[in-house]
Structures are given as structure tokens and as C-alpha cells.
Image 1 (cartoon, one colour):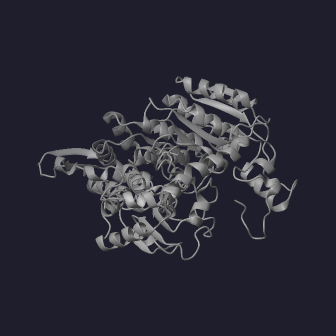
Image 2 (image 1 turned 45 degrees about the vertical axis):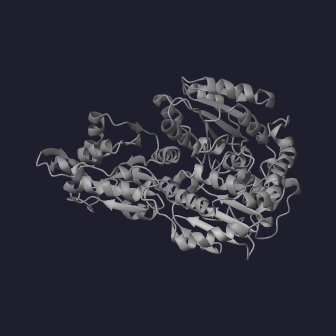
Image 3 (image 1 turned 45 degrees about the horizontal axis):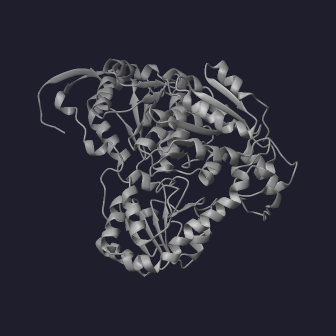
Length: 582
């Protein structure tokens, strides 16, 4: 970083200055759809060799940028033109905001000389998008482009990361300015989350350490903040040294490998063994988790009086839903490392907790035996559990599984096993929007590179919303494998209708029967229709072996709404009035 004044002037447009700053930042792919307001920016991207990816829908562009950010911890980039291009970003921005994903979204604005005179496509887009972003910046002066881009990166990656909106009016993008060359610099510490790490208060750290030391049955609850902090080594060190099992949220899957002897799996609305362990635990260490509705089964999972230590980068999140005995407002990696250092020699505690630790693989083995019927099901149409079992057997350890909202995230969160630490399971749990699977797969593939394989899970409803992005994936040479749960329904809604209102009482939840493999082939991709459960593994291997185009596996799954949910069988589910079943 060198901010020395050079007195060397460079005349360029605001759009070119924007691209120049992104190049300095080592920016990854930019997902968007061009328009007149930002034309100088797109031309500069071409001239500078920046990778701008034409997307078919701006919402999908934001989803792709979000997934890219999840697998790299670098800001995902997307853009939209004035009006509908900008407002189409709303859902994707809220996904990133709620999930704490670093993102920068650039939108074109109206020429200020003619603004609010019924300009074509003009709307109060800045006001609409402001609540969807961590911060929103409107660049009013061309000369300030470098400064405000630096600000955007700093905000996006520090504290709890999030999306930053940058609006560039047409005249600011097109006007030229004599920039001093020294104005083009960026702080490398702001280019990746977690930027600006903070340590916990020493006195509170000591209090947390004493609580943990006293516990006979401690349990760690890990959320997505572990990924943002890249706290894997620190978490595993503490867990192994102290004999503390680790459960995780959907977003926290991969905090430690699911195959590790200390992994208690998913907790919350769906769980394997973790909810029972929460009930039995005498001290919970919550790290990088907001303890929201899903993780706490609508705030009823953690009983009052349970000893709880909460680590979160945002102080205001602590105590928001669940009382904490000790609050550590700090970076997850540093806090976990400091806790391990404070506790030091844990041999005595390990011996005291030996039975608690040994119970984890026994409990997990019992759960797997109970889940065998779904994981190895031979029924037709195919049980989704059989697909999850096949994915666990076939996917390489470094593969990434992207899960769309709804069924895909639920089944994947409960049944998919990560084999190594890291974010190899990517669900859109910030907003849980349907339609994330295909664009999320594209963003993840560009993020992890061509040597790692990416599989995207989506329902037929989610695929219907984003199938146009198959063309994008094909054009980019992103050979993702898309697994479609084809149940000819908006399955989650139909399952809920079945549970709440009874068999046969379905409204607006059925879809037409479609051959999505044929659709994929018509779009120049590889398409495989799978109706026999015994053909699943072969189809997955065929898709993974194909690196010349995207592959779509059109998997015909159960049409019975009583068997669509991963955690329960609706035929035995009792729903009380006012409850939300699973």
C-alpha cells in the first residue's frame, strides 16, 4: 500500500476509475448485465482484462456473487443497470446481508442533470436497496471514485461482513477527471473477510474459561461465522484438547468434518443427535451463530438456565434471542485460540469427559442405523435420502455441494457428510430464497476453480426460476452438476399443506410433469433422467466425469407429500394449532 503523492495525472472516466480500483483489489468475476449508465465501466473491464460475466437475470447474478463469496471469503461482485437491473438485486443482497457475506453491488444511476424528470427506467432504487445492504454509497463526484471504492471494501469485509451498494450516476460514470496516480491504492487487509479481527476482553475470556473448565458435558454450537473467520484449526484444537463435541447449523456444516468422532451433526429444526445432547449438556459454547429460529426450533431448544457462552463478532447479536452467561464480542478464530490457551492442560478434564465424548460416535451410529431406510431406500419414485447417501459415497472430499432453499437445504443439511473442514456445503440460509441452486453453483465453481467439482441441489420449482443460467454456465465453461428433485410440486409447501390441513388439501403447490434432462440437452448441456435408485451413483459419476459442459440429473423423487420432509414422516406427524411443523 503506497499513498505517496506522485503528481502523475491520469485522465479517465469515473467508470474506468471504478474498474481500475477493482483490478487493484484483485477482484474476481463480476456478475451482471450491462446498461448505458455504466458503459465506460464495462469498456474498462474489457481493456483491463477484468472478468465480467453476463448473467441472464440480475437476481441470479447476486446469488452467484454470494456463493463466490462463501467459498473464497472475498467480496462477491455484481452489477445492475438503472431501474429493473438494480431492483432485481434486492433478494440476493438480502441473502448476503442476513448471512454476513462480503459483497459489492454496483448499480447505474440516472444522469443527475435530468433526474426526476421521468427518465426512462428511473425509480427510487437507492431508497429501495438501502435496507438490503450493510451500507449504501452514492458517488456524487467522479474524483471520489477511488476513495469510496476503498470504503466499500473496508465495510464489506470488516466486523460482520455484508453487501455494500454503490450507485454511480450516469454522468459520474461518463465524466472524465484528472486523477493523481497515487490515488489508486487499496488496503490489502480489507480484501478478504475476516478483516480487522478483534480479541475478546481478557476478564470475560477468563470467566468463559472457568465455566468451560467446570463443565462435565460441554458442547460447542458452531455457526457460519466459523467459516468467515476460518477458525477451523482453532475450533478443532479446543474441541480435541478439552473433549468437547461440536454440533453445527446448516451454515456451520464443515466447521469440523462431519466424519470426525466429535461431530454431533446438525442441531435445530432438523438434527441427528445434537438436540438431545443440548438438553444433556451443562455448558454450551456458541460460536459464530445468531441462534435464530431454525437453529433453536423457534427459540424453544435451549432451556432457561442453561449455562451459555456466546462468541460473536457483533456485540448486539449476543442476548438477542438467548440469554448468555458470558458474552465474548470478538473474532471467532482469535476467541477460540485464546480460550484454548487459557485452559492450557486439559488432560484431567479429558478424563472426566471421556464417557461424554465416547457417547458421540455411539449415538451417531444409532442414528445412522435409523436413517438407513432413507439413505439406502430402493423405493420408486426415488427417496431423496437415497440421493444423499449416493452423494456421500461418490463426491470427492474437496467437492462443494450447493443447496437451494427449501428441500435441498433441509435434506443436505441433515444427511450430507462433509469429509474435511471448510465450507464445502453452501446453503442459502440468509434468506432461504428459492432459485439459488444453479447460479450458486456457478459462483461456487468460479470461486473454487476448475480442479474441484461443484454439485448443485435444487427442486423443480427452484430450477424453473433459474434454468436460464444453464446457458450462462455453458458459456462460461462451468461444468457444474445440477441435481433436480423432480416431484412435480412445490414440495415443501405441499408437505406443509399435507401436515396442517390433511391429505388431499393442496392449493397452488403442483407443477406440470417435466423432463428436465431433455430441457438440458436442448440447451447444449448433458442431461440424464434418473428414475431407478440403483442408477443414481452411476449417473452422479457420469456427471462428475463430464467437464466439457454442465450436467443436469433429473431425479424423479417421491410424489407422496407425507414422505417429502427429511426429518419426519408426515403420516405420523401431529401438528398443534399455530405450530410450524419442522
